[in-house]
Length: 445
Image (cartoon, rainbow, N blue to C red; front, side, top):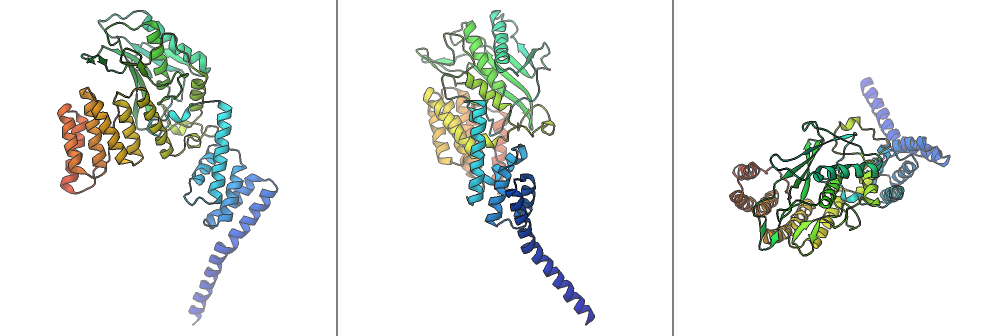
């Protein structure tokens, strides 16, 4: 009997303790937090209201006042991050609405501080990519056996100097050590048979990042040594092209929508059917270009050249404050691809990019439609390979394996690469084992 009484007593104590924790304590911490809030002791208010919120996470009043206290603190990185996460709450209650108001306020203040920009166009696959240390080591790799005009090197140097002087914080050092370079500029010979039926199709220059995990190892700027007619580029053409590509090498992975900006996308030169960004005068770096790269280098990077643990985040900006969610970023990519198509409607690249953006958003029908258009416009084997490969990936990720295999074999007939061989192996393994295939990404030009 005595043991039962002890058990009952312990049970009563336990129940009382639970009641205190679930009912009494949240209220105590909440009212303590409100008192500190009224006295404008925001750090203490945040502390107490956070405890109350965590004890009763579904209490709307606790949530709202907690967000209010949070918005009163200095917006260091962790505060920004938590506020953004609260703003994404699907319930869309008063607390998440207040958090969204605060996010909009911070975004407006940041844009006012840094000036007009196109920061939404900078992400690389939904991630912020930029260097973390300066100066950046630059290597110019000239082709052997083809003596290029001397102004090629001088105009490349001038372009780097222009970025350095215009920004005020970017610094570059030229090196003779190819392996040591962080940015490499190289030239390729003019592609053979690049002109068909009066249309010359090639990319004048492009920039590719070398990434291992979340580590940025190198940026390579590749340019053709001559134009579509076999002529050496002029000094203006070299300068303008490299100037633009340096912007990409710095981490601006998209394009501005404004023709006034250096980072406006390439366009078809009137009357020549050549896809190019060349102008008759020397290009310049606009105020918006500088505002964008300055703002980029104040965002916490996802991919950079040092360990992210070594980045001092406190005074930097949590990227989603400006860039939004992954869905928001992909919607911007849709707009960029549509702008690309508007400027070059007869080239498949814009439709390939559009398909990738739609696929990321889960809009398969639109992605397939964009790929079909890209296929119609494809004139080279490389373009057709990319389109068929992307058809295969899109169908595989949608578990339509037989159709995916058909497209993958069509891509393999064009180019028997390790990439497509791995894709076929993945599809066939899924078909034989009835297991879900490993998800793959669509590729661009």
